[in-house]
Image 1 (spheres, helix red, strand yellow):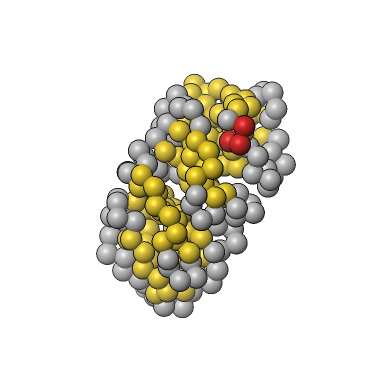
Image 2 (spheres, rainbow, N blue to C red):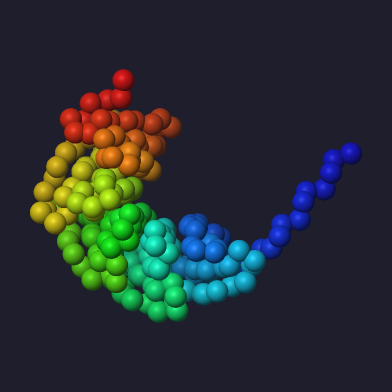
Length: 209
């Protein structure tokens, strides 16, 4: 006889298919496909309800837990998680990936083929030249926020946003999506759409041994 599955401690109905989640202090943020974002305490109490006003592709909570950013097919927005105020909103071509610096002072967002960098309240800081295709993954290389890795078709580009400089190009045969970066910035691993992982040493771009 099969035992009945354990009951969940609580559920929350976002009203839409959930397509993105991230942790917030004492809870979670869950984003629905139509742009509704529910911020829920660990006991199931709904803390905030936010609305992107666009279909949602990705969201990211700042490491200090004070900001939530979300992106969609044509919009990027940032909220203050203390009271739910929308701090900024920008148009975007396609934003499926967002990444905060470790210090929570800057946000990198994919804006079509470009990488846009905003400050913690959403003010524009920089925008890159177009990459080979739509940006599919982002990761800051170091805590100081000087360099950001951006994945797209045929590899990863390491950018220095403040100087508008391409530091390095890490080639790959196909489309790279998810990214992982070593804490010291010495290696990058990307997940490819051909079901493989590709790793590079930085600097130099040599493949992992």
